[in-house]
Amino acid sequence: MSLNVLVVPENPTYNGAILKPLCEKLFVECGRAQAKIEVLANPRTNGYEHAKSLFPATILDLYSHKHLVLSCPIPMARTGPPNSPRWNQSSRNGQPLPGSPSD
Image 1 (cartoon, rainbow, N blue to C red):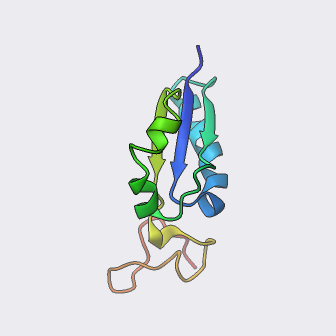
Image 2 (cartoon, rainbow, N blue to C red):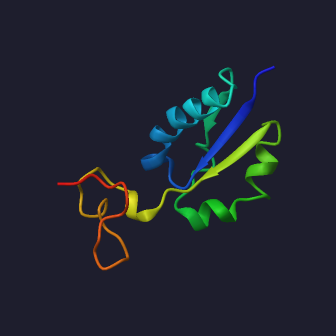
Image 3 (cartoon, rainbow, N blue to C red):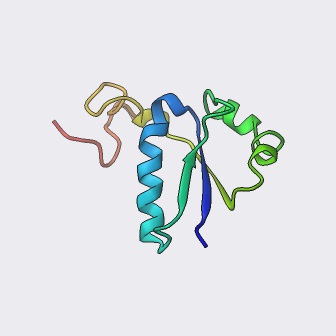
């Protein structure tokens, strides 16, 4: 029996495309290569607070047939394309975050 997984991004427009392959790889590494991953498209979430407000009433009611529901917020400092100003931004005196691409 395969695992039926729903991934809830904070914004499917920007994060949905990366989360599906990332979660597929995660489940392969966990020994669940046959897991069926679906990224939430409806209701469309818009930011962390909105996604959080949809739990449990809306998302869990609509998707109660899923075996697992993953909420996947993306840290704000890492949004945007690599090497963009927001990618390297941090709250610690303008220092790049650990693991950021270096110039």
